[in-house]
Length: 197
Image 1 (cartoon, helix red, strand yellow):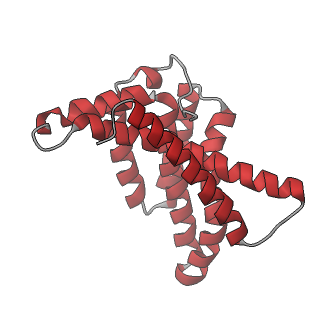
Image 2 (tube, rainbow, N blue to C red; image 1 turned 90 degrees about the vertical axis):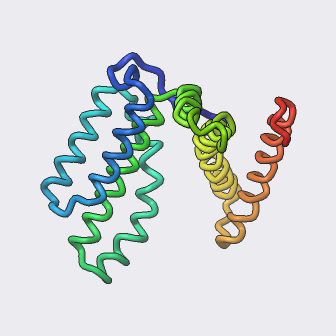
């Protein structure tokens, strides 16, 4: 599995994971409530500045943010026709900024650190919640998202190499089959490490 972490020594890389999680949550909430295009543009510039401060490679950042743009190509025109182009534009920028914030977090925070942070946060509730398993679940989720994206990209590339286009079903079937194989391999790895109950 491919991790998203981009090693570095910037202030953002060195910041405590718990603080980054808190700021990510607050930032996403604040961005989702902004109604003024100028203020939203300012928020986008702040996020761009954070990427510069973190010295994250542009290619790594683009790989995390680009997939949302494909969805917006479909969603923005529909939203524009139904609710107006200003609202559609605000929605698109909000979504891009929120995804960029999440990408900045994953690019500057090792999965092991996320796992440890969740374990510490859930320790007071250990009587009811297994913090180790929740932390493992979060870590696996973070790692599996790029794995699934890679599977889709490989299937698309294989179709392009064969010169076939096909339907959405022709894309979905190999993606689902390959995802199930990857999930099976992951399950076997977890069982081998004692996470089989």
